[in-house]
Image (cartoon, rainbow, N blue to C red; front, side):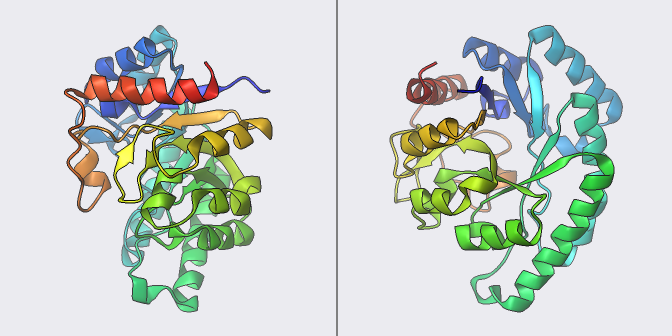
Length: 276
């Protein structure tokens, strides 16, 4: 089995970067997928700020291999804004040492799921991929609620049309869309670069990995058995500051007293599954 690279969206432990690094070290997680830090999204980082964060990560022994960008989490009419944004994100990724950029496939209303909309998605993602190739980064598409790539079938259309775009597999997001995550895995497993460790109940409530309907233990074992090694923990067990920018109607998450308690519980559940 390959050496496992365990990372996390550490902004769920706190806005301040020092709190994020402490949460990672406390749970023996060597990586971070940077999404928001000190009150701003990763897209708002300046090169100088990114260099500062890189130095702090090096001092803490933390590595960044992926950027949790919002690219593609926008209406199709505004797609051009994110194409322009990608060049800046690529610059930040290079400074931080990240080779991968997480992205999405544009908001879509149910009545817009047409061949015309699919063609527009593929065209816009093609533009992003050309930028990514020039900038030397790998785009990683995450399945998500409310976007074109909400279903494994639509995700597969993206990867078939643009094979250079890899998949980030999120079981909880499939559960929240009423999709069997195990079926989605079997359809997409050859396209997956890394894994977002998150689980959910059929009601949509996010729970620690293994406590939901996402087949997380089974899928993780299959992912690791086929040589997969990159896992990002995404707790979503406590209402954190950036949540309102990530979801249109964020659910109140209050099963834990503090963000640290929720983060640590999520980390324990994941590590119990993979045996580390």
